[in-house]
Length: 120
Length: 110
Image 1 (spheres, helix red, strand yellow):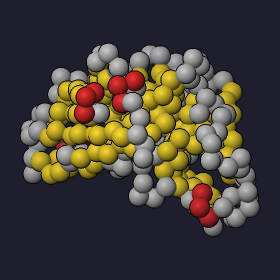
Image 2 (cartoon, one colour):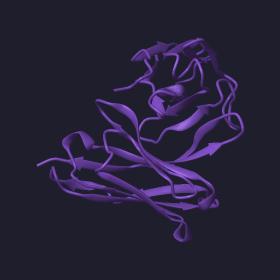
Image 3 (cartoon, each protein chain N blue to C red):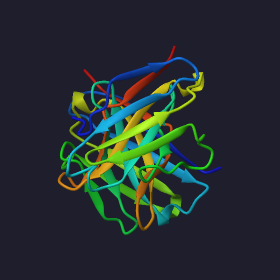
Image 4 (cartoon, rainbow over the protein chains, first blue to last red):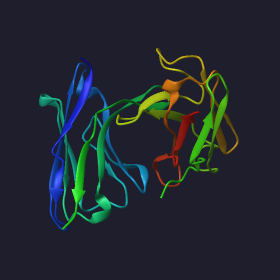
């Protein structure tokens, strides 16, 4: 089955850390850019970070310097190390595959999401 | 936070046509393609329309997308109860250098 499955969410205090994982199956993981997109009640869908097929990384301004995205192609796995967490990082975190053709790009596959709650 | 603006809600009776707008700017919708995502209750988003007006296989032709200038629209014709969901537009933003999403529209079937 072609899918993405996230894990690693939970409850952590402000200033703490969480490591999210996303395992892919059913497709050649190494051939795709993979992104993290989060969704919180007050802020809707928000792009967080991305990693390209060559390992190049990109971050939104709100997480730059605190989050680290990485991948392990041999295990078809994506990670998001989240440090110095804040209450506003509370959200469901989705990993999403980005497919690009010559003329467009689209998030054509999403995981089911994992919830990260930052609260004391 | 969201760069693309959508109405918070839309509704219609079964069989009616519902249209959702997505307002952006010269740095996103005007110069880049628009995708639409459907999020059924309790599930992850899934692509509904890509490349402004293309439907993935399996998406009914009741759903259609269009774009003009700095705005885009999603139309649902022949509204059905299973269309109750949240709908989000999305586009690349050349100024922010990242994907941006709409504020989301909740569609209710009366």
